[in-house]
Image (cartoon, rainbow, N blue to C red; front, side):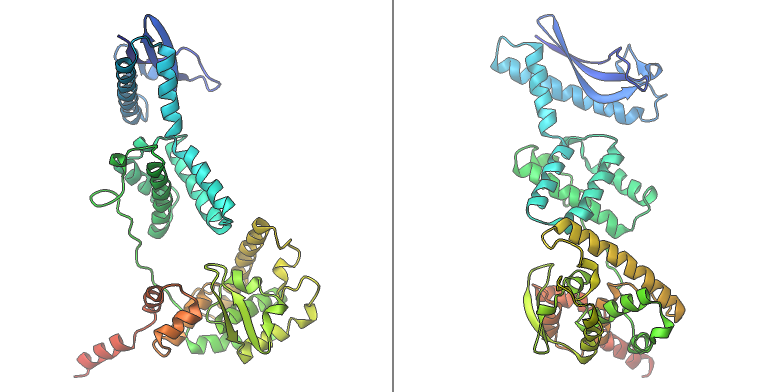
Length: 403
């Protein structure tokens, strides 16, 4: 009969700390497997095989020890039942392989590779840092079994207090973990009973956000700014913002990808990058005036606006990076313009879409708005436009107060 014990190996690392290890003994032969945790010698209770309370994370480490011991014992009993002659090294190999296969961050790397092959570079740019934040929180690797409801609640507190992010950003971080956890279940790396999400556990629910767009008078103030009022970079940023507004809040990624060949007979033909929905719009006169002001910059690259002209069209990563950098640059100039006119509201690129929603209100039928926004589902349009449809509510309130 074999045995499993947790010990502190007397092999100091470069930080002068000692590794906590699993010692597997069978037929008087022992093998050691490191847990990945290192502590000072003074923090180890040799008699009770546990971390002393003097260590800042004693409770967490001792819980980890108990879990590792239980898993190693279960595997030893399972193997001894199947095989009469088994070495400690064999047990160690099975346990190590199990730990390795259930590594969250190993599967996270595969998940990023999947996105890479699918050219989902926008998602990679947002989700890869979230995976990094989780790794920083757990201080190394973690198995799927160790991603408990309690661990995720601690992570939420960490994101809010240490990283000072919004509740919506916290939920985005949890969504990434949930996605990778679901992949692990699908691939048989972890049993569904360890799933920390769902009713009675961690529930993914996005908080409602308030979308504020500009009023018609505020847009007219922006349109009335003369070239002498702005620097050239500010004028360019405002042109991009207004062009986006005039095309129903077209996303900046789509605006910057526009080519002269996309404009034919006074119409714009393009496919939206987010969902590849193709369509055509008659170019409004105000949008045409902006386009005409860039004809003098026309060159062999075919791009209307300059941000992507020096980027190789097939280089998706470089294109995405250039768009992100342009967005930051535009927002900086738009903020300066907002301060100049005492706007009193945030002025960023995505506010152009909110502004179109605010101006359209309940004037345009929802089915037509779905076409303009190029939403795949009309429910998305209804949910989005609900942020800007106030007339019925306002009239109901007035009817009570003025009765």
